[in-house]
Amino acid sequence: MTDDRRQTTDGNDAIRIVFVGHVDHGKSTLVGRLLADTDSVEPARIKNVEAICAERRMKFEYAFLLDALEEEQDQGITIDVSQVIFKSKKRQYRIIDAPGHKEFLKNMISGASTADIAILLIDAEEGLREQSKRHATILSLLGIKTILIVVNKMDLVDYNQKVFENIRSEYGKHLASLKITPKAFIPLAAYFGENLVKKSQKMPWYSGKSFLEILDDLETPHSSEDKPLRFPLQDVYKFDKQRILAGRVESGVMSVGDEIVFLPSRKTGRVRSIEKWHAPVETKASAGESIGLVLEEQIFVERGEIACPLSKEASVSNSVLANIFWMGNKHLEKGAKCVLKLTTQEIECVVDSILKVINSSTLDEISKTAREVAKNEVAEVILVTKKPVVFDPFEEITETGRFVLVEDRQVRGGGILLKSVERFSAI
Image 1: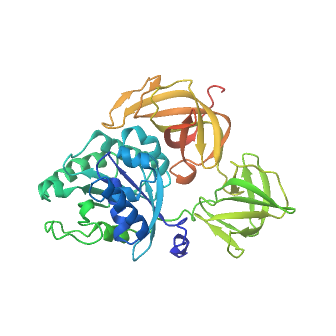
Image 2 (image 1 turned 90 degrees about the horizontal axis):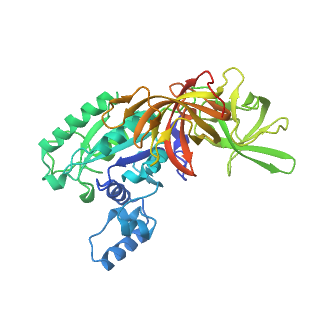
Image 3 (image 1 turned 60 degrees about the vertical axis):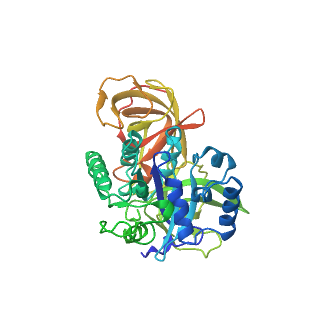
């Protein structure tokens, strides 16, 4: 299959990038300058930002090209996950602008959980911060394999090679402890566009390519179509007497004539047609495609169920072993109740057991007998769900193996499911 599925005009199937960095390390400026230098933003929007900056008697702020809310501009902190599209000469990208401020880690996890590629920013002048190490731990936990490290604001250290090399050495050791091998370390000055789209003349000691050139050289992320079919149901639409089951194919391939089973209800059906909005009817759909599915016989299934092939079903369990990253201000205690959100499933769960807790920055094990998980700690836990959760072990199918935990309607944590375990207690 070609990469055509990632070249849609609306960006739904573009390569997904998450930019992650400590507050003030220049992430939003980098993204804004990238949009401007690739002609990916309307001239009117640039003029609007120019007017805002002139009114405030400040220099042009590329970050304002991203900030949708006046409140965010006033605070100087990006506080939500925004998604924008930009195109290089080679292909199309969808930017997931994950925040860097410590209070907004929950948004960063929400954004990063869908990314193909992660860009980790380090401020050349400030150097490594605890948050930088924590971000790497989260990306490792979410299973993002393709990572670029950008050492930004090189202009503030006079483009000093030694500063860059020291950061590369220190951060490289931390990444190695997480078993992360970054594709590249790139020095740049985002505000001035140095080494961003074109190779900079101010860092002759750097032998690598520019940021965009390296990004374009990365292989297109492998689709998950060689894995078993997983089709989480998002909604059911009724047109006349026909029921269209809408969703996104997370892995595998679905073809007309296939017999599939919906879990956890175990209702089965045969695919009569595969439809797309504003597109011809298809005979098959592959991982990454959002489709409407029509079965030969009408069955009653609901949002949250996952269609699988009869020959390779997903796991269904009320008790699962998971690695989590906790971000709630209140400690997560044994017996605490949350909502587990995985694909389109939203299921109440309880923390049955806390097996061990790890410091997310130092990676030191804090306790093997802990009864609670503090903010910004990683833990191995057993979750017991109110109704069966449909999943795959994260190592087998990423898309149906990672989740977020919601408490009081706020994302408080995220993580990956490892396997089903014996049920110890009831919710």
